[in-house]
Image (cartoon, rainbow, N blue to C red; front, side, top):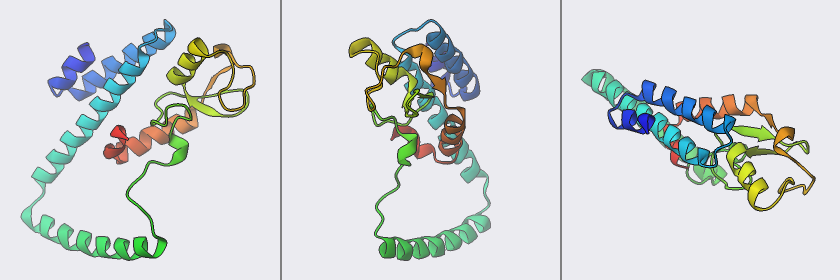
Length: 169
């Protein structure tokens, strides 16, 4: 709650710190509502990113805005040509950043013994509701068998820092 209150007061760094601590404690204490904490944490990160974007735009000079506008217009024109050739759709989060259970972007990815990565909280819910097995491979799996996927977690955090829109994906 403190993290959410600090998010509302636009004290994002402190809010993110408190929400991260709350999430770590929820995982440690095996609390089932850690998914709500993740959503609050992602929301705080998104709002921080949006605020930083507003500050950057406000501080730019008019000349720089004009030059950037010309560059971006040309870049968009080139991207449209490439997109027409490749027939790509709108921006999407890479599939390997998405949880195999909820299809949401992962915050705390873990690897099962079968090598499949899931969001920790969704996999724990699966264990409680359905049983102690890997949802895709159907091999027996317990919480003690899970290992954090630190490389993927770092890649997702980097992606979210550069693409704030993806927090709502």
